Length: 411
Ligand SMILES: Nc1ncnc2c1ncn2[C@@H]1O[C@H](COP(=O)(O)OP(=O)(O)OP(=O)(O)O)[C@@H](O)[C@H]1O
Ligand SMILES: [Mg+2]
Image 1 (cartoon, protein in one colour):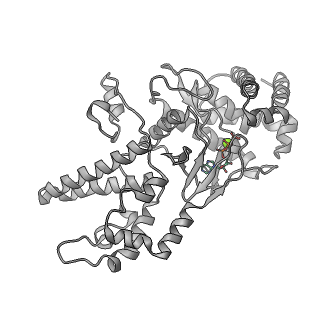
Image 2: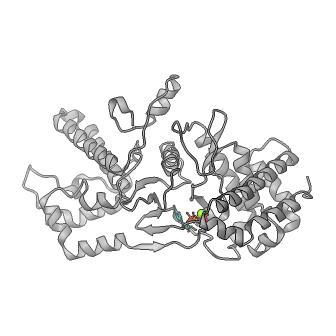
Image 3: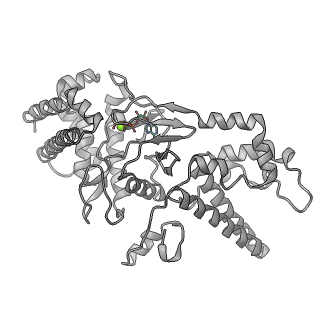
């Protein structure tokens, strides 16, 4: 949002401004502000459509549609679902008086023919928006919402399912959204995820703001996850998966290269961004991956995103996926091909496009593992229960063991 003009971010305007050497001032909106901004936008676009000469009407209506899609998206609703609802209930519930009302089922193109919205607004109102938000204005619609089947559909939407996996807080699913505890770092993480969305990067959840409980809301990444299972499913250790992880890392590092964090941004893993660094995911382990029909759909759990070099971020991926953790740890996860590890590390680096030597990269991995162990110790010492538990369960001892083994890894 550009404060002086009070405008929602559209297209790649911040990047365009930056390319002229100027620094745009943007602000991630909170739930209420964002809801209000979207509604204002809808009213603006509708006014423009009303005033447009007939030859400009298609373009103006397309803008209205774009905002409607954004509102649905912001509430975690699939557009298909909105169109299906309009098709199902529109004509019988809202009989058109010739010339005075729109028959939505005829006037909306099929969902599959709609182009993707050209802009992705940043934060969103979640549940509250669904209750009293933008689209429930007409009397007919309110009457429809009171019908028993609508109410039960609504209740179904709101049902929360605890998702399997996660040590530090976990996540629940509600409809097509995921809810997770937020922290001081979450607005920055959402700015990052919004940047990825705006750039067309699909290997990460889209940020949908915060719900009325203050939890972050994100899109659900479709696919299989490792969850709490041990050993891990076979796809985790397949050779082809290594290539997919390397390609994801490469694509992510490209997508994030032009992301400039908001000034004063705080990150859970600490550190301050400066030109030359990226914001790494920093936790791209199999336990944060979604695997869909033989393809790595992407990574969730961006809590530890923060300033890093690309190789620092890649080092954690290598440690997790080659895998290079202590032998007893990876054996319990189902990995037994120890002799293949140097070859697998080489494969990951080659696919990613790393141009240094194995010895240099192993050095980065060792540093990265040390920082990981220190991070768990620090967070446990600061009284974070989940990290105290990790410490008690021997996670830091395991990392020390991994470091001892890495010291003799062929280079
Ligand atoms: N955006 C998402 N899309 C799909 N599934 C998700 C998403 N976010 C979380 N999950 C699911 O929820 C589970 C727990 O989530 P998450 O990794 O965010 O928890 P956590 O406690 O922060 O984990 P960690 O122990 O890695 O810190 C995951 O194993 C995954 O199954
Ligand atoms: Mg996780």
